[in-house]
Image (tube, rainbow, N blue to C red; front, side, top):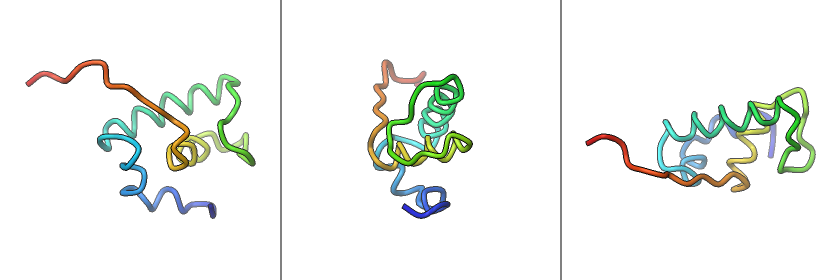
Length: 73
């Protein structure tokens, strides 16, 4: 995957999550984990770019999430 290609493929990322809101939350949480020393789930990840690594992990289908409850209706 070429650098920067993940950020332009929002539709591809949304195949792995249910909404842009969820995507932002997943990326934020994963980036915090990487910043706290949790090892990346993909090979060749740049330790100086945790946000890019998070996007690449989602794009590769390495990040799973489970919605625990529906929002207020």
